[in-house]
Image: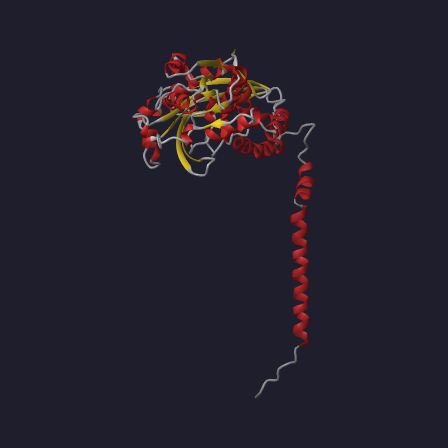
Length: 407
């Protein structure tokens, strides 16, 4: 018998109508768990709202620092991008929220876990894979898969579905369900329209230590403040808008519009710094891992040995990713204009056309001869085979009887 249910609670309509439904359906206490990962004003009065809707208690957990340090930074350092564009803002938050929900459920002695994810989306998978990792003994209640409400239109007049945290904001639904239609100008909340951005460019310098962002324009900031500062800078220049038709985990395609201004700057800077300090083969190996890491995050497989193994690899690659990158922001673009690191593999002494003690230009001849050895061997064999074929043709011609001319 279910006596207490721990519900992942956002304060939105979906989870608010779930509270009375759970109480009526199960006759159980409902304990709401709301996670603050940077939603800002959206969480104002969330506890009072939960209690008013019938919840017996509502825990509001500040997880912003952990979200950035333990989820955003590892994903950034891995270079993970889903569908060539998506910087995984919603995906990264779910494993953290669900784990904290389980922890609260244990504290209050809950008999079941519940979430407000729809039966068509990715979040149901992300939440429930985390439940499986930390509370395999607790049953899961997913009202959207059970009740008579079939769509968000049945429950709310405001069609857009938004998810906001310190890293990004996503927009889905409404007119966006028509891929051929441009997003309305009033849809965007974090970024200025590029055509309305300042007419003068702005430069911003981002500092990294071991692949982790630590400073903006020389000022050291903690993780939360750093992302906030870059969101403000990138946002006012219209940087970080993404319009993507993506493949949901459940199999269908959907359209999402994302705003990730600070994240866009961080990905650009981090990638450029890696290009400066990592060798070609390490970069290539890391580029193989990045899409696998992105899939893992998108699919909710955060709490796995696979992710731990990828992190171990990435951590080694980041040991020398220390330095700074300067970006120039202008009308929706972010261009790299400078980069420096004490670990840079670039050294003008070695790339100059003059002689140096490390690289002698005369060495190039031997290198090229060995580097092209396989091509040279194949060409020699082709020549030998062609010569042998010609020789056989000549012998065959010699064996043919002469033809007598008739007068």
